[in-house]
Length: 73
Image (cartoon, rainbow, N blue to C red; front, side, top):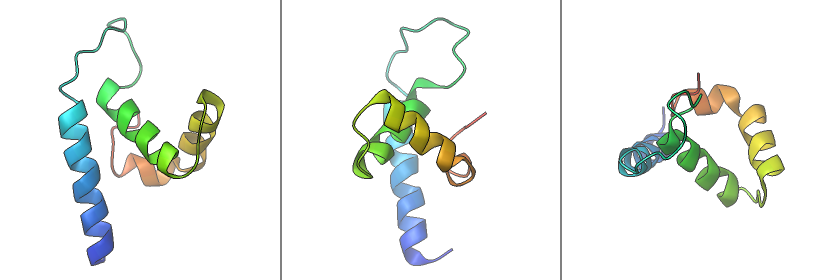
């Protein structure tokens, strides 16, 4: 992993740690952790996604890469 990749992974980890502390008002049986969803949505937004459909497409197309950074399952 190159320096830029390490910095990106560190940034994602920091975001997940920060947003992982946000209280989750959803049902207890939610599929994904709220912090992971927020991190994915930030990444998708930075890549130009502007709505739920684009966020979903971003997550589907980058599942392998995202699964190295957040709890995707």
